[in-house]
Amino acid sequence: MAACSVCVYDAGPGVVLASRHEFMDRGQAEALAPMVQETMASAGVAFKDLARIAVTTGPGTFTGVRIGLAMARGLGIALDIPITGINSLAAIACNETARDLPIVVAVDARASEIYFASYDSSGHELTAPVIVALADAHKFIPNRPARIMGTAADLLLDKQHVRSEAGDLPIAANFVKLASSMPASTLPPEPLYLRPPDVKPQAMKISFNTVGPAAAKLLAEIHGESFATRWSETSFSEMLAVPGTSAILVLSQNNPMGFVLFRRAADEAEIITICTRPVFRQKGHGKLLMQHLESVLKIEGVKTLFIEVAVSNHAALTLYVSSGFHKAGERKNYYKRGDGSQEDALIMRKGL
Image (cartoon, rainbow, N blue to C red):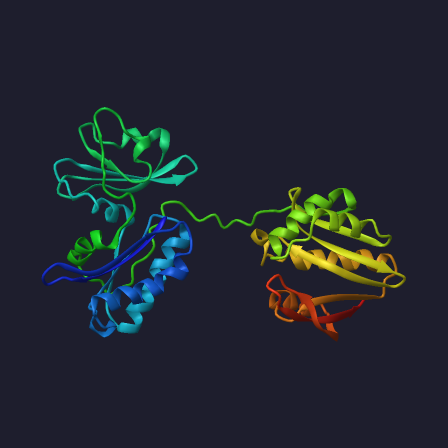
C-alpha cells in the first residue's frame, strides 16, 4: 500500500529489536532492500541468525504486493528458512491496541470498491478479506458497535461505530507478533488478489500531426519536461519559421506524447531534437516517431538523415542505433551545460 516497513523481532521474549516505517506512494522497490539492511544493522542481528521471514500477501496494489513477496522469497531461499504470509487487512487490524470492540478494516480499492474484513475483539477473523462495492459495504459491517480502520474507514462511519485512531496501513512492528504465532509453512506464500489483474491489451490510437510555429508553446512545454535545459517558446517559433524546418507530434488518443523537430535541405535532413514525455517513455513511442519521420522524408526524396547526440545520453544512443544510425563524426565540447561544463556530441548518420 502507500507505505513500506520492516522490523526484526525476537519471538522468545516477544521484543521488536529494530524497526523502520515510511509512508511512500511509490518507490518501495528501491527503498525496501536498503531498509532491510538498515533495520538488521540496528537490531545487531546477522542474516544467518534469522529463523523466519513474514510478509504481507495483499490485498493491495499488484506491484506493491509483488515487491514484498519477491523480497521475502529471495531472503527465504538465500537463508533456507520458512516464509509466513499474512493478509494485509489482518496486518492493519494489528495496529489497534484497544480490544473492547470488534474491528472492521476497510481499505480503498479504487473504482468505488473497498477491501473489507472484520475481526472480533480478540482479533479472530469474522469476515475474511473480500472486495465489495462501496454502496454495499454497509451490509458487511456488524450491526453493533465496532471500531473501523483503514483508508476507507471515514466512508463507512455512522453513529454506531467508532473511528480507530490507530494506523490505516500495515506496520511490520505491529503485525509481527501475530505472524510469529502462525504456523510455519514449507511452501512460499501466494499473493492474495481479490480482483483479477487488468492485463488485457489496451488499444491505443496513435496518430501523427505535422505542426508549425503555432505549436511553439506546446513544443516548449514537452521539451521542458524532457530535458534539463528547456528551449523557449520563442526559440521554437524562430526555428519553425525557417524554410525546410518542421515538427511532427506523436499523439495517443489526441494526447501529445512527444515530437521530433527536423530540418530538410535537398536530399538530406537533420533531426534538431526528438523527445518523449517522461510518463510515455520506454513504450516504443520514440521508435514509432522515428519510423514515421523516415517514411515522410523518403516520400520527399530525402536520402540521408543526420542527428547529433550527447555522448552520455545512453537512452537516445540506444534508440538511434536500434533505428539504424551509425557514427559519422564527433564534435568536441559541443554541448554547454548550465553548470558551465561541456560535453562532446556524436554525429550519427542513416541512409534512407
